[in-house]
Image 1 (cartoon, rainbow, N blue to C red):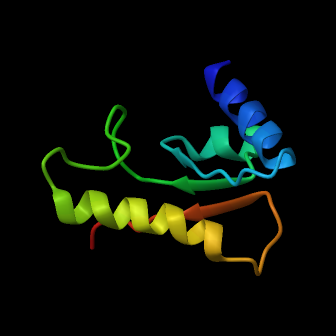
Image 2 (cartoon, rainbow, N blue to C red):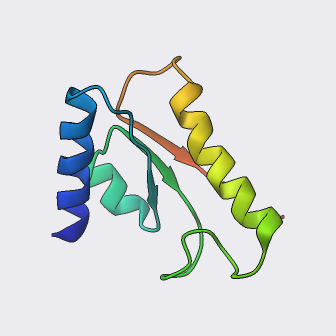
Length: 86
């Protein structure tokens, strides 16, 4: 229910002209809720920015999320995937 509420709030903010990006830990939830823009991350629950104290990795997640705001090639809803460590 909480994830649904986040998607609904994001959609309402978008209707009012405020762009949003959700960072999602569960791809299935993002597909079902369909927020305007979502970045799915392959990390364990409770760690949406990956490992604590890993500034470089956390910055990479935030930058990937913010890039979704700049990418106008695809209309919402957009579900992008953050790459797992290789």
